[in-house]
Amino acid sequence: MARIAPVFGWITPASGPAYRYYLTANIPPNQSAFVIDYEWEVTLPYGPPQLFYGETTSMPVDFGNPGTFPVRLRVRDGCGWSKWISFSVNIY
Image 1 (cartoon, rainbow, N blue to C red):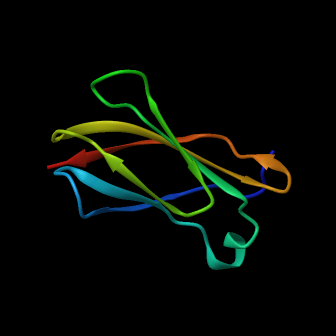
Image 2 (image 1 turned 90 degrees about the vertical axis):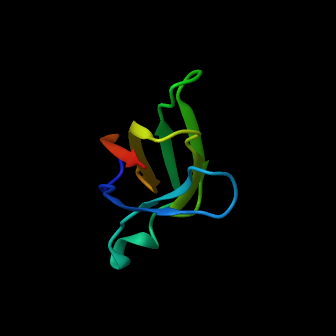
Image 3 (image 1 turned 120 degrees about the vertical axis):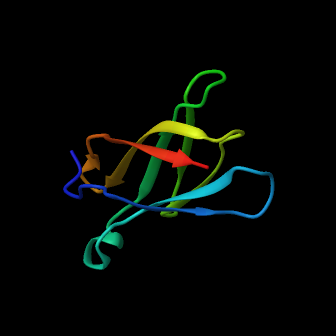
C-alpha cells in the first residue's frame, strides 16, 4: 500500500464546454516526486462512474450540469496504491 495519503486540493474552471472543471490533488512538495499515478473516480448523473487516470495532479472533468457530485481519489507510489479518499464537489 502507498505510503502517501492523497488530499483533495481544489477545483477550478477550465476552458471549453460549460461546467468543465479541473480537480486538483494536494500532495506535499516533499512527497510529490514519489507519486507515480493519480486515479480519480467521478460519479455523474448519467452512466457509470467516470475514471480519470494519469501522472498529473489535475484532471479535467466535464460535469455537464450544476450539482453536487461524489468524487474519489487515490495515488500510486513505489509501494502500490493508497486507499481511496471520498468527498463531494459542488458545481454551480
